Image (cartoon, rainbow, N blue to C red):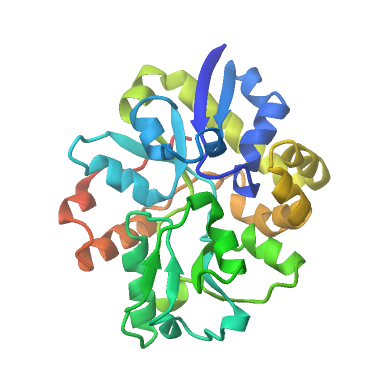
Length: 301
């Protein structure tokens, strides 16, 4: 057995379900892999998934696509590459409580946005506001990452970035009315998020194991869409007590399963979608043009 380690981007949730299923159902074991899953709660997000990848604390890290750009363009370059897209469509949005009366992103001007401090996040939100007629002048706060959602629902922030298939399901279950805005509706292309990242040298050193990891992972995500009730029971083993009590796990799977993809598309990254995001970053002077020629992703299967 080859032991591999995967660093999660967040506390266990529906976007991770394929990994949990593949582990519980023995799909990894069948491919000669013993998978250790690293929960960010273990260190209260002291190290990001990207940093754990860089230090080889993990063989794989889950993160938004922008993390692979960041790793390849920092002073001490990390030769990272995205190897698996968990979702085939962007299921995230910018959310505000309806009670805040922010009926348009432009009304975020002068308000408080709770940021995860992701590489382009603040600039993307400014662009969202400007594209809807605002000035992009709002206050940005950087709360503890794992507590940002609660900052919003407790009224300590006016807007933040959420996953519709997780926090959105929690809000629905609690009758918390939200205004949500997608980036695509404001002409902002976005890359795949989340994706699985690996260092190129690790892919070379553990080539067969990495391919088997992707094969078993894909099987896990496809299983989730076809076996809802069993998948709920597996997910229940991993989520926090808070999420177990506050989120309808079955609803999250039903809302997400179509976006895991099919046998042909599961995990796949489309070159046009990646290029659109990269070109947008360059056009907004958020990145140097050199990113357009970097090998930032590989479809391994």
